[in-house]
Image (cartoon, rainbow, N blue to C red; front, top):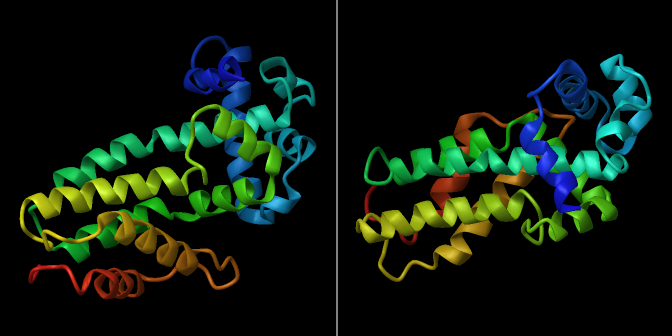
Length: 208
């Protein structure tokens, strides 16, 4: 499993067979998820959407869930850079504004669809946990990102010293996910996200 997952780090590298086809398949997953939702995602749907042979995925991955695990882990890895940007915001702007920007960046349309995919596929969750992901992959890592930022703000005195960041962080992630999860209505505007963030941190923020 670990070897299959590590292949996600190499997507887009190497010769055409090792790079172009998986890269095309990854883009096809995004389009299919946004258009049809997680329940319609199959290996045939991906290869048809990508315009590649049905056997392409199986030359790189043991099965379809291994391919999806690599896709999700690639997305989780991107949180490292997002987390660094958010931590660097500590002490600048307002806490609510910083959280609003981070939550909007986090829950852009593809990420919401990927969360739905994770929830709907037991085998995929199992593979991700075996690879070391959070109990709820992607959302768990995102919660750690928000908690790290809130901890930095607490150290700077911009939120209360006794603020429970390990409760605030999952509350922010859960509330934001509910806002973004409605595929019918489309994503919320920044004002709605800002209102949620402001409401949740109201009891601990010190005027910023």
